[in-house]
Length: 132
Image (cartoon, rainbow, N blue to C red):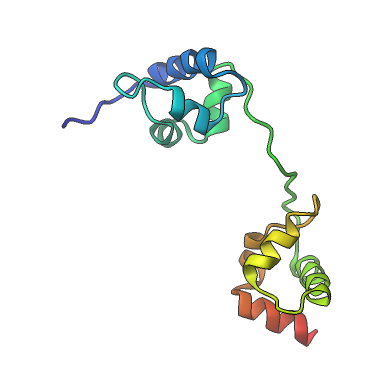
């Protein structure tokens, strides 16, 4: 089966048409559930071509979804360690999954993956937090 190649203009048109059917703001899930699979590109193809879902939606003249959390990019090691220590003070059986869920309660907390990006693996994070 040959792969259909869509132009950027066709992708933007698809976004506008599906948005009329699915409602606004247009999420990836809404788009994929409401698109005509035989004539409209997948959300993955749109993202590959246009850079990101938000960029594609804006280029189509639509308003993108608002993020469910506010993200801050200025966390350093000490910021992350403060969050980890706070979590450890409240947890009897710390786990990465539990830590991740715990962080989600706080709007200004880093994501668990951000903590790993800054400090390393979960075991390294625990070692650093307990040493200092």
